Picture 1: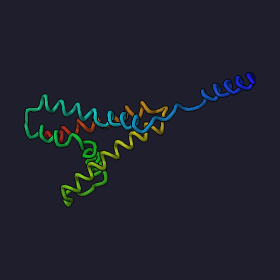
Picture 2: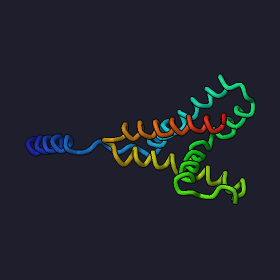
Picture 3: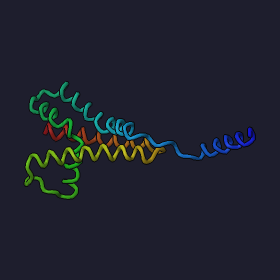
Picture 4: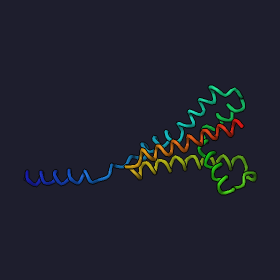
Length: 143
């Protein structure tokens, strides 16, 4: 009986080295995705509140802080695919921004869960992309 147990532990130990790293849970992946997506916007908001003297720009940053990833994704897709801007109501545009923000969070979280070996690269690329978006959003607000 002890020989069988040692065979099982030896084979499981050998097989454990060949398995990929375990996938993360959804809450853990969503937490890290929220950090990658929202941390650059929080830094942008802190910068705007600390160093921007225009009250209008501060107010615009405060209003756009929650939906900023969706605003950036819509602006990028409208620029690339030439989507029309002017014919939509404010409620429809706000709903679109919220949906795109949730899609960005879900997409980064799915990437973090799907590719365990590449999760830090996924996090870094998302953080760099949304940092660039936060910088460009502040530039658009300031213009």
